[in-house]
Amino acid sequence: MNETDKYIKVVSLLMQYPDEAYFRTLSEIKSLVGKMHRGPRRASIEKFITHLEGEEAIHVQEQYTALFDMSPSTTLNVTYHLWGDGEKRARLLTRLQQVYAEAGLEKKSLELPDFLPLILEFMAGVPKAIRSGAIKTSLKGIETLVERLKPTASHYSGLLEPLIETIMRQAEEQATASVT
View 1 (cartoon, rainbow, N blue to C red):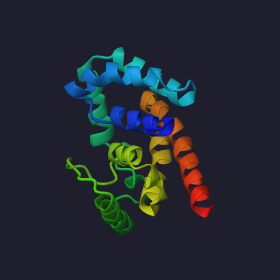
View 2 (cartoon, rainbow, N blue to C red):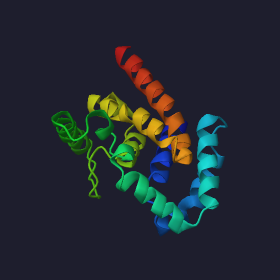
View 3 (tube, helix red, strand yellow):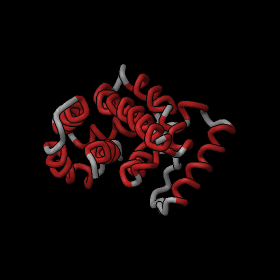
View 4 (spheres, rainbow, N blue to C red):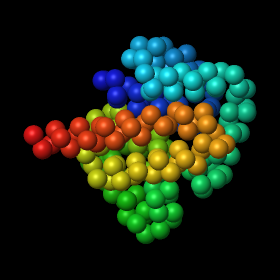
């Protein structure tokens, strides 16, 4: 797994619901992050983990639920940020499910296919996933999500901000590779 895929995988893990298992794996994640190249991606993860370590688990869980489960404006279902609950979104959700099925991914959760941690996990495991038009389109919703998180949850927006550039760069590299 290359550096970018490791980074995407770590962000996918950190954006999951912070249950007991989540907190048990933080030291493992820290170890993995310590082996990453220094830079904005690593710094954003380290800052996020430091924030988590300074909070009680129940507070982190309450905030996660309030932000991502109770507030449509900051949902982790990224296509919602593009179209709300419209027909375009429904078509893209269906296409995402097809992309996952074609790649052999068996969805184990009840989350919709545009759930950010699911998309990121898929991208980390299937590096060429960014070539999929459905994946690329879905990820456009991250920019809106980050902007909406900034005023109330800067630790989450700080974690996700470097992801935008990473995804854009990865999409450009995939496009260039497919042309040559």
